[in-house]
Amino acid sequence: MLRTFEKAALEAGRAIITVLREGFPVAMKADASPVTVADEEAERIILAHLARDYPEIPVVAEESVAAGKVPDIAGRGFFLVDPLDGTREFVDGRQEFTVNIAYIENGAPVAGIVYAPALGLAFSGERGHAERLVVADDFTVGARSTITVREQPEDRLALASLRHNSPETGSFLADHAIFKCTNIGSSLKFCLLAEGKADVYPRFTRTMEWDTAAGDAVLRAAGGSTVTLDGTPLTYGKTGTAADFDFANPNFISWGGRKRVLEPA
Image 1 (cartoon, rainbow, N blue to C red):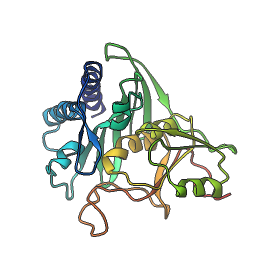
Image 2: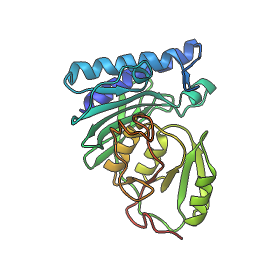
Image 3: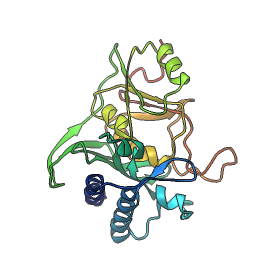
Image 4: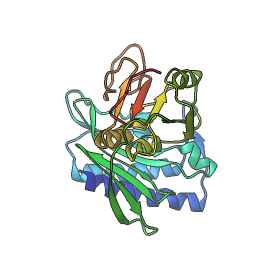
């Protein structure tokens, strides 16, 4: 499955970079978030790969959902796709945008890839094994290395959203005596935890499942965890709840290391 993800992500990344170089208009969706032809073309490419190799598995993809195309996933494994996570970063000329593909089984992200085409890096993981991939200028993989989370050090480094920080984040860091925090966009935050370059990512503002599933899959495969505020694992496939939109995440905390996961200062 990861080979399919890899081919789809690399092809989608090539299309995104082509759009970036040629220029593009920006439209606004109903939720006031931006969308470009790069989002749409990348999703078309990914859906074609998944339909070819796994025609029986339903796909929940961001732009398709925005267009009202939501498959029935009840009691089934399914794919979650964000063809261009960090569209605002993409529009602003930053390099942190990513392509995200994940497979969900029994509510858990068990396989995923995060590809940052402008950085020439990808991260993939499934069932206890995660890798960092160096992607060459011709969009082929030049090197692979296994990655794992690091044990929680005394001087922990937190990651926060570049555009969606909150007062709750500051309170969490203070309560856990975490004094170093770096802001970064897109799902790369999960990947920095997965490769042992940071320790915790608290999120107290809205995310959707396609925003987090691929990065979360990589993180869990590398030995990390993503939990809700009551300490239970974040689940996927949340539909039919009166309290929120389908596929919306609650607040969560992603941890790199296994130790001191919910231990306050």
